[in-house]
Amino acid sequence: MNELTKIAYNCKKATFLIEKKQTGEINIREKLELKIHLAGCSICRTFEKQSLMINQMVKNLMGGADEKHLDEDYKKHLQEIIDKKMNEH
Amino acid sequence: MSNGYNEGGVETQSLNAKLWVSRYADYLYSFAIARLNDEELARDLVQETFLAGLEKLEAFQGKSSERTWLTAILKNKIVDAYRKKSSGLEVRRSEDEEAKAHEDFFEASNGHWRDDHRPVDFMTDHVDPLINKELSGILKTCMGKLPSLWLAVFSMKHVDDESTEVICSSLSVSASNYWVIMHRTKVNLRACLQKNWI
Image (cartoon, rainbow over all chains, first blue to last red; front, side, top):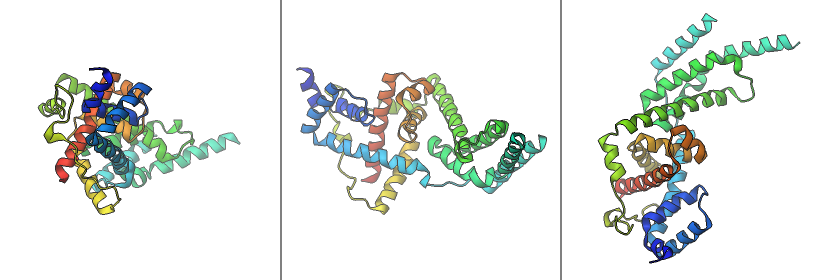
């Protein structure tokens, strides 16, 4: 079995390359290997689609859209610390 | 006169420090918790950030906004926390993480998807805000289950857009291990989403 045939059937390697590709760090050879695999593997095509959606969701989720609140007691505590420090100077 | 200008500047800044809690505490807390998934630690880091900010008031040159400046301090604290967590892991990894690192989604012999882990096309293409919200909620829970080193690597890349080099050096991860973690994290997250959605 040559290398290209191997990747054509190896989903583990293909999904690895899918992740690597998303940050733009795969070489031409890897790109070709992945292309060949994806042409024949609908499961990994689904993986790739979902993987990109997850990236987007993570960005939206962590982008600050979801505001959390510190409880008031802790804020009061923080304020006291700051006031105290500032009076020292 | 430059002197008067400087004094004026310092005064404005110290006045602003009194407003940090009301202006930025919630923002910084949300920022930290999104990256650490640990409420207690996030609270501590907000406090440390304010304290470090007070120490460095003179160094603030007004080149960035106050919020950006405080966020930069917090970011460094978060990376320190990641580092602490992940170095602890190398000494003794929890059983859960051990299991996850070895859980295999692919056949060992040929790299095929295992039958029970095969991706199913369950996410819709069209954007429905309600469904999205529900999926995001599940995703959050799934991220909370990741080993802390994985979450650190993953969020530095996908939330903060840090370069591979910066991530590897600040977390002391080799380049090859970095890619293994990125791959495993995504395969795990996707599987977790699918399991909890369908």
